[in-house]
Amino acid sequence: MKPWVVGTAIIALSVGLLGSAPAGAVTLALSDAVLAGGASLIGGPKIQFDTTTPGQSATWTFASTPGQEYFITITGHSNNSTSFFNFFIDADGPGALTDFVQLGGDVSLSGFSTIALPSFIDLGTTDYFKIVNGGSGRNSGGLIDVVDLSITAVPGPVVGAGLPAFL
Image (cartoon, rainbow, N blue to C red; front, top):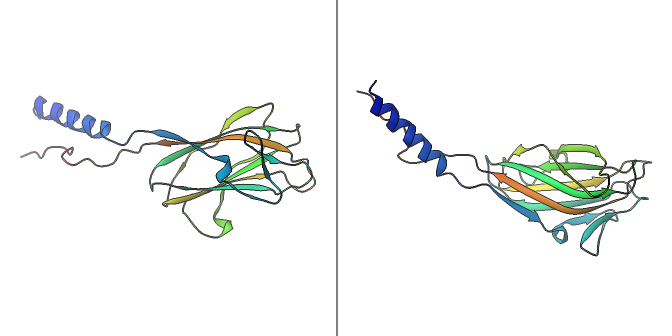
């Protein structure tokens, strides 16, 4: 194989990868969450989950791109060491509540801390992200300050970036 053919193929592949969409981050507005079970928006804004009612939730809907890898970070605070949150994603769009997959469970946020949830690959064009507080009989109070959604570009095919044919 001629060295210039290999060099051309490497350059074409590199240009193809550089031409993919850039990664980005968005902060999901806390005020856009659908709150249920007594969760409420308080000054700042913050989402408040009280200590007396487990199962309160906040759910966001956001547009997404199939095949993209997404990361979610949460900044918040648990009222004490027995307070916790559960985090769920429905990455394939509208469906039954059983379609939600747990990204993190029984997470206690000490002080005001930030955690990163496991990444996921999107399957649909609309996603639902849900935070649920506590569980039966457990203290479940806490605050959520920030929900950041980071998008990692997945390189796609670029016209003309294929390997040259060999004769």
